Length: 38
Length: 458
Image 1 (cartoon, rainbow over the protein chains, first blue to last red):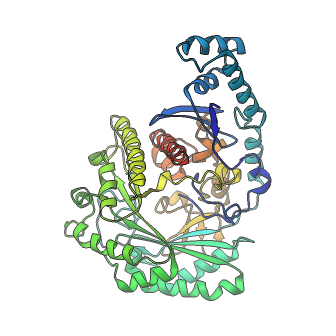
Image 2 (tube, rainbow over the protein chains, first blue to last red):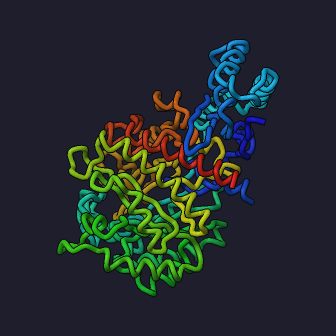
Image 3 (cartoon, rainbow over the protein chains, first blue to last red):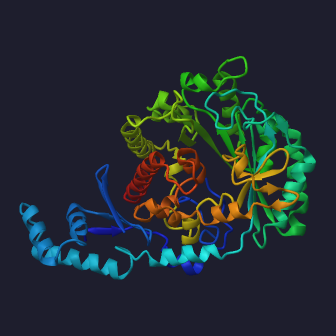
């Protein structure tokens, strides 16, 4: 009732499905991920 | 770790290590604030007393909200454990280093003479120089050879003013395209320009080949012309704004953004952003100046609260204009919460000195464009590769957990420990912390997340 949780990428899950390194370099938080955006 | 704040009428709770964002009401906000330090009975008593005039806040209601908090905690979305992130940081140490991005300094010279330029009017404490095609070609080969299995490679054409060496830029792009298929690589190019040499040839080329173009404009004419002058001291605003407008009008393929710099002399920088939006530019960025603390441009302690307020003003105006159907974006507010970076990226940061290197016109390698000219940060060259492996390893370990100040900071999964160049220029060490930059960064993240929450409820 009093808490709305936004849809966010689960960082602890990304330990398993992240780290491919194909994302663009940054000059970080708003970086689109190549894999999850496909 | 949890961070709570109120902004623009929203109560927001962030959970650092899961990346969760919660929009809550006042009652839940108070419950979450007290949850780590009070017993259930104490929380119940406090909330029922504080909201005794609110008929909707009943004992059952508060107990339900407490149960929700506990459920979120059990799901790892509140008060989550940093252990996973710390273990991930350890694994990064042992990952092989591959290079996936180069900043090609194709011109160490410039047709403008901006007094606040971090690159010393494009010369980076050295002599004027242009990169030859042969050096650039070798740099591209070096990138491919050292990129391992990475398919997406990035090359930024940088300076100085890269359009002062436009023929070489065109030849290098053609060469990269000629080897893409054979090497199974995908090159993404960026061009950063002051706009002086922007013409229809450049526009056509940029539309065809540049994924992104960064256009330097500081906002209002009097602000822009105060610093961005030619070698005769004449302001460049009247020359470049029509060129930028034509560029944006004809930009059919790829992205662009306007990149301004604000200084102590225009701490009301939102007016410069709004000015750019009113000129028809919709992808905007304004960055704090990087200069010596005794420079008249340097931002002061007294400026900090003003700047923080400016970021809030900007966020509110962006919401207003979005509702009016004339939106614009601001670089630091473009958060991708649902499909953003993984934890590896968030811990490692930008990859300077490891995945990303800068190449000078003579082929020397530096950790990034902001280290070029600092002799002790030379890492090697494009013919023999990275020879200063000790320095590379220092950058590799320079992640968010390398800064003791960052370990207890709620924003550490958003900023990744900050910019190594800023840390170096502020403290003399890449593992130092540029606290002024931290304060600005945290305010920007708070505003960016507030915008996401507000847009979600629109």
